[in-house]
Image (tube, rainbow, N blue to C red):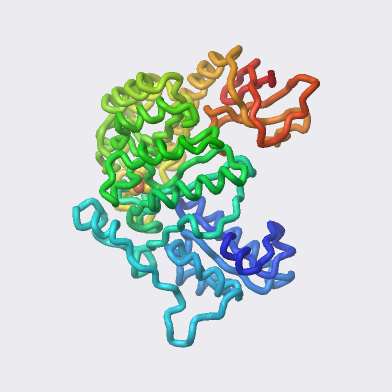
Amino acid sequence: MGLLARAGAELSTRAEDADVIVVNTCSFIESAQQESVNTILEMAAHKTSGRAKKLIVAGCLVERYREEIRKRIPEVDAVVGTGELQNILSAAGLETAPAPGSSPFVVLPSRPEGEAREAQGRFSRGEWDGAVADLPNYLYDDETPRILATPKHTAYIKIAEGCDHPCTFCIIPQLRGKFRSRRFESVIAEAERLALAGVREITLIGQDTTCYGEDFGLKDGLALLLEKLAQIEDLRWIRFLYAYPNKITGKLLETIAAHENICSYMDVPLQHASASVLKRMKRGAGADVFLRSIEKMRRVIPDLTLRTSFIVGFPGETEKEFEELCEFVREAQFDWMGTFSYSDQEGADAYGLEAKLSTREIERRRKQLMEIQRRISRKRKKSLVGREFDLVLEGTSEETDLLLEGRTSMHAPEIDGKVFVNDFPPEIAPEPGNFYRCQITESHDYDLVARIL
Ligand code: SF4
């Protein structure tokens, strides 16, 4: 969006008003691919019977099915994969097209850091069956123009791209390439600029945030980065998502605990708790190791909010292995938990595994696990009633005009439960994007009700 706007495009979210339509796709799991294809077909209708002159498909689906998209959906004028973002300009007709005979894609210099890790044996994938000859190596920096798609007080910053882990259910490394970190100064410069523009909450993301800086030879790179970001005065809440379990160091936990503007919040997708399933997933560890690590996190960071996610129905998951997972969830007492049904992905190692479970059985297990967590969540939310927190106001509730909605530092944007606000003193006119002191007055399974003090 930033590149297009800088080149003179006027952006619109209404497809019927657009001359050029860009569909940004995901192909992480089958349902995402289906949603992407449905959206492309829906948008193609604007070209045949509406105003649109061009249809561009961008994102991960292109990395996987570049040729198929071109062949099967003739309405598509151009595709732009995850490693060739700047080609959006020529695709949209905002830049001169490449000369005949030359490569239609800008070739980026390869990232020596990624290569260095591969040489050290850190890059665990031998073969690539992605649709492109080269893995994407694009990485944005603080000079890349950017338009925020989030409310003005909150922003995501991607600190690294790609992943070198070998998880057998996952095709993200094929789609996003080898792990490479953004430069330290680039992330800081972007955060400073965002803070100056009014952003008060920063969420650091990447496929693997806890490896940040390893490719520069930095030890505890994420902790160092957080430390530096915490010095930016206008940032009230800083957090990161997607921690890899065995990459959580003592230094990282201590850094979180030491700074008031780093949220006492950890998102650690564990994927499973049975050691045998985790071994087949090529992730390792198991319930005992995880429980010790959680105990340490809670000891070092008082009042920690802990989020995780699991995959149920991995090939060969026995009743016993599933029960181990249930027992672990009862013991670990997460604040937030997501559960995903295993989705078979061509190109992922697990695709070739025997003993696939039926969709029905996977769904039964997913519901059972969520029911365990629902009861845990209900209890944990109830314990918050009467306590006071800072809350950022998001605006009028999507569910009813009669309530306002906000988040505390226990709630990451978009993924965690909601805080409904039903009362505030008559002398204030609550403004979205502002922070208020609030008291929790009611709790539900996942959501809370608060009044502004
Ligand atoms: S660490 Fe995450 S992104 Fe990387 S391979 Fe595993 S599941 Fe995929």
